[in-house]
Structure formats: structure tokens, C-alpha cells
Picture 1 (spheres, rainbow, N blue to C red):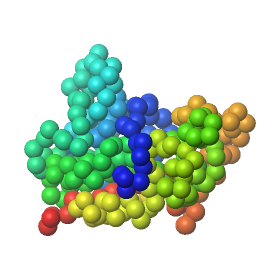
Picture 2 (tube, rainbow, N blue to C red; picture 1 turned 180 degrees about the horizontal axis):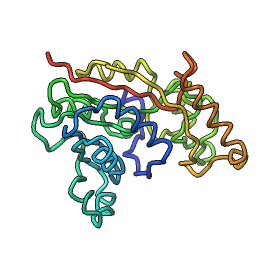
Picture 3 (cartoon, one colour; picture 1 turned 90 degrees about the vertical axis):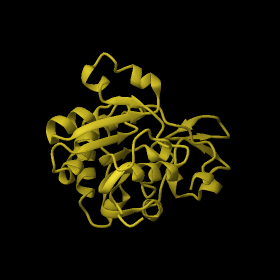
Picture 4 (cartoon, helix red, strand yellow; picture 1 turned 45 degrees about the vertical axis):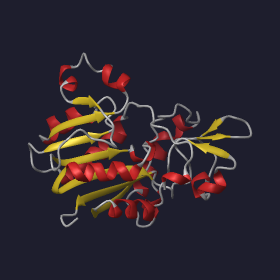
Length: 255
């Protein structure tokens, strides 16, 4: 999959949003039921999930972040300073079987080689350890990272059905900022790396205007739009068109 996206670069950290965080924490809480277990947030940004995991779930959570500038920005926070370190997910500086669980929260689509990252995470997980993967869902009809149109040089977020185009065809017209995965693609990627799928889920948008380019009329319709989005998340088949796909995976023992 890496070879089909020519210009993928490691993404800049963006501050997580309250409703998005709440949904993801709800998923994590259903599976992280043993206080004290060691949890590694891979590509953690400024470590915003770490205090939530530690305080609400009793998990011993740490994070690794590629961008040194982001790690430097949290040095005044003593809690995060002790728990967030700079590192490369393709070459993790941890021993085999060191961690109980790990998470890739909208990170895998930005790394240079997603297969190397998954194999490294599998290596550091204990037998039976869980990996939580949140990633773009290509069935969602908009590319939320935006694309750069080659004809105009401008970046667009609201061009419909961009994710539905074959990648090589799309590259004739635009440059992508991140990968986007079909559901079967992500499943195979995880299984090939030595994980068994425990649970699959989907998350619909929270419309918190992360890009800063949300149309103005959304502010008037926002309560209705969020109600519809939350309802769609629970409807069979419709839910599969959510903006993010979620995989809870377990390290296979016999590999």
C-alpha cells in the first residue's frame, strides 16, 4: 500500500477534540479493564490521551511522538514530561514483549512504512496484547485530510467521492496528504502483520471543525447534523460509511 501513495509525509500534530476524544475513550474503556497494565500511545502528539487513560481507567500509559518540537512543547507539564518521549515508530527503542497494549490513533496513514510500524508494535507487545487502530475509512465520501489539486495548487476538503477513485488515477489530478484505507485493506494489513481482529467498529464525524474550513451554515444546523451522525453510527450497513474505522486487534501467539 505504501507504494501507491507517492508523497505521504509524517503528519503534523493536531489537538484532539472533546467529542472525538469521548467516543474513542469509550471504545478503549470497554477493553482496558485491568488497572496497572502498560499502554503505549504510538504517535501520541502532546499526550492528551495519557492523563485520561491513567486517571479514568487506571492504565499505566506512556506515549511516543516523532516530532521533537511537539515533545519539547510539553516539557513544562511534569506528568507528560515523564511519560512522552521522542522516537520513530519504525524502530522502537523497547524490548520484545514489553507492553501490554498499544494504540495507533489516526497515525498509521501518515507513517513512511505502515508494515514496519505494525511489525514493530507487534514485537514489543506481550503475547495476547491488544492494539487499537483508528484510521481513515475510505467508504466515507470525503477526504478529511484534504488533497492538493495539481491544476490549481489549492487544497480542498469538500470535493465529494475523492476516496472512491483508484489511487493511481487520483494521483493524476491531486496529491494526497495521507493514506486512506478500504476496510478490507486495513483488515489484511493487520492480519499480515500478525494480529487477529477482535472487534471492528466505525465512527461517524463529530463536526468539531478540526480543519477550520467547515462551512458557516453548519453552525446553525450543527445539533441536527450531530444527531443524524450519531444515529447513523448505530444503523447496520450505514455505520460502515463512517469517517473512521476502528480495529481492536490481538497479537497472535504462534508467529
